[in-house]
Image 1 (cartoon, rainbow, N blue to C red):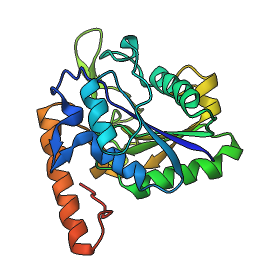
Image 2 (image 1 turned 180 degrees about the vertical axis):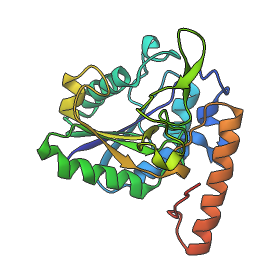
Image 3 (image 1 turned 180 degrees about the horizontal axis):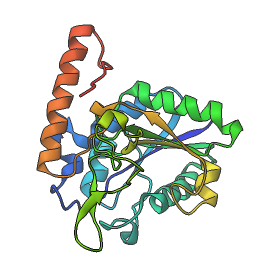
Amino acid sequence: MAILCVIGARGGSTGLRNKNIRPLLGKPLIAWSIEQAQRTPGIDRIIVSTDSDDIAAVARRHGADVPFRRPDELATATAAKFPVWQHALVEAERFYGSNFDTVVDLDCTCPLRDVADIAGAIEQLRQRRENGVDMVMGVADAPRNPYFNILEAGKDGFLGHSKPLPGAVVCRQAAPRVLTHAGNLYVMTADYLRRSQGLFDGRVEGYDVGVGKAFDVDDKLGFAIVEFLMRRKLDAGSTSGTEEAEVNG
């Protein structure tokens, strides 16, 4: 498989200014994802999709290619990921003069994933694509459950379970398992990206990264949480002799 890794990082972050290049434990936030991609077996090219000259300069210093600028309409706070990936694939194939078989996306605001997670998701897609699987994405057990403790107000304004079941679900353990969209890892066939219009247009499977790695940097609180967990992860890695020690929260 010819594998392209795309790392998206727009310049106009609103929750935390310049978060994508904000220093995290001694290096810019985006550098963690670039280095993870560099250490992942099988990834052939690493590009950063950005509209920012500052982010582009940092990305290049850490070894990623920035062969194009992301168009303004794909760099807004409401822009979806899927067209950003589609644009990146087209521009990357034009730049390198060759086609890719697989696309990996690493969100630079989610540095807690491990190289083993990226490699594992790539391998899962490799094995499952003959069964029609188009994408493997990072997931984890959801901290809140719509059958138990996520609520919605009805038309009368009174609260009830977001997804009520016959009979009361009185404890979390009795509720059906639900997953959170970790947002940290996506592996998809390039053909799926070319022919589809959205994330769940095809057959999508989850790759469980674990609850402790399903955190992202969106604001100051998110940055503090990720920084704390990343420091603990690195401390565990130095104790065990590997940076790939798992954080389970």
